[in-house]
Every structure is written in structure tokens, then in C-alpha cells.
Length: 180
Length: 180
DNA sequence: ATCGATACATGATCTGGATCATGTCGGAAA
DNA sequence: TTTCCGACATGATCCAGATCATGTATCGAT
Image (tube, rainbow over all chains, first blue to last red; front, side, top):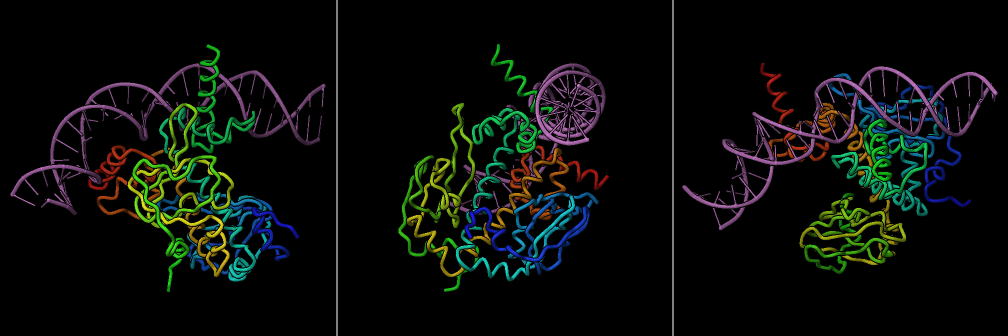
């Protein structure tokens, strides 16, 4: 069977047993030892860190096709909780089986290619978010990825770390400046 | 020889020929095909994207021990320029030799472990930077990494994406609130 | 001991964007 | 077609934090 690189986890988890979780269910908890690895087949799981003040910080949203808490493959403890944000279906394999599978063929190379691209994208996003003004962030975004289609702006606002309202105002100002 | 995981690139580039660049020199340019891979031995290289408006966005700073533009191992073009921010010494190998080396032993698994941790850290940083107030970002940072020593606060300010002045003010306010 | 670089610290000012409110528009579903 | 939801849009208000200025403390190097 042919697998494209970005589907490395689908390949490794092919035929793996599945588990179903209801919305709000916990897949694993902080400080648990990672015995299993989970590939999300359906739904969304958030990695949530409980803060001292009683609040919580969502560190990641894992969706279809992605491995849950990838770094935990190589860690001896989970560093946050995994909570289902929706009804969820995951494929589940013993952690060491997944690590073994990575050592075969060139699976680890494929996974590394994915991870490298992810790192690259995240580094870009961090640098864009470090810019102080909305204008500068938007310029940088458009330069990196081009202008989005209508209906996508709200996602851009999220990506560059500003509210949609503020982005719409900047866009309006640019339209006006273009028209005179 | 024993290599710890985080030194995977040192291992792969062991004995590789070196190149020296002066500050300001360009290692590669955007749209060049990646023929070589570079591991930084000394100095700092920035990945710089030139923007349409004539400005530039630094997407990454690569230092000692790290592979330059890791994702370019698996890409057919560089997506930005690599410019030396200091006097630089790099180890240099043909790209395909590095990819081959990854396929041997468990090198790719070690590199993947590093990359996964990097992804995890960057995701955390993005989520912290999405928080709207300095107070919330600082709380989240301290919760994740603990209070830094004296002399490190300025780096925290950078990490959470605020100016040092603003951070010092927040710290002063917290000291006052603690004493009363 | 002196010098220089950098972190720490605080004041004054000003503005970009968060927030809340309110409304229109466009596309998908019934 | 009508209904409904989310994106798009804009007004009013307010304040957190950027910016600039200025000064002190700390530490390593000579």
C-alpha cells in the first residue's frame, strides 16, 4: 500500500484497535506514565494544563490524523491532561510498539519530516506574534502565505493572535487607503 | 562512542568538513535547492524572509548544536535566506548523506524525539502568547517553567512576547501586593 | 579597583487594540 | 424560499502596555 508522508501515523496505526470517548472524557492525566499512544481518528482532544490559580491553559488541539501528545512517546510522564472536546474516536497502540514501528522502514524519517515542517510553521508563527502591531503581523502573514479567500479572515486573526474585530478594522483601513 | 539524544546532529556531522562564514555572510538563499545540510558549531545564523515592503522577518535563530533549517532536509527549495549574525563555523554534509544517515541505526528516532519536544515547546509558547494580558502570560509561564533566577527575567519577557519594562512593572506590582 | 555591558527599575505619555454592542451579508440546510 | 449561523463590518469606550527617558545595581573582565 502507498502512504504519503503526512499519513505516517495512519500507516503505523493501521488496523489498530479503537477506543471511543465521550465529550469531556479524559484520555490521560498529567504525571501518568505513557503506556499507550493514541492517533485521533475523529473529533478533537485538547491538551490542558491546570494552573495554580485554578484556571487552565490549553496547550494544543489534536485533530483527525494526528498523534496525541507526540512528545510523550519519548517522555516518562505526561505533562498535561488530555480532555476530549468532542465525541472522540482514537486508534490505540502500546507506546513501545509505536516506537518500534518508527525504527522500521523509514517511518521515523517520515515522521521527522512532518515534525520538522511543524517546527518551521510554529517558529514562523511565534515570530509573527512577536511583532507589536496588527499591521506588521498582517503584512508578515500575507507575505508568508498570501491573501486568504473570503471566509478565512477570522482564522487569520486567530493565527496572528488578534481579535477578528481589530483585523476587520485594519482591512477596512487598507481598502480605504487603496481607494483614496 | 556514546551520544545522548539531543546531540544527534553532532553524531551525524562527526568529522564532517567545516566552513567558516563572516558576520553578514549568506549561507543559502531563498529558492535555492538544498544540496547541503549545515550543523552550526559556533556562532548564530538567522533565517530571514525578505518582505514585500522592503522589511525583513527573522523566522529563526540557529545556534551551536542545531541543524540549520531542519525542514529543508525534506524540501526542494529553501523558503528563506540564511544570514550569519556573527562569525560562524558550520559542519557541512551533502543533504542526501544526512538523510541516509537518518535511516541508519535509530538516528531518525532520536531526531524525531528532539523535534517532538521542540514542537511541544513551541505550541506552549504560541498558546501563552495568545493570552491577552501580561499578567496571564506571566502566570502561565511560571506555571509551566517556574520562577526564573535573577538575571533571567529579560529572557522571560522575550519568551512571552512583552517588553522588559512592562514585565518589570508587573513584577513590582506583585511584590507590592505581596507585602502590602 | 575601575570600567563597560547588561539587567533591573520606574516615570510620563500616548495609542493600538480589546471589549461590548449592534447590524448586515452570504451560504448552507431544511 | 426561508431560516439560521457564522463571517464580515463598524461604532464607542477604555486601558494595558509600547515607547522614550533616565537612573541604579550587578557582574565579569582588565
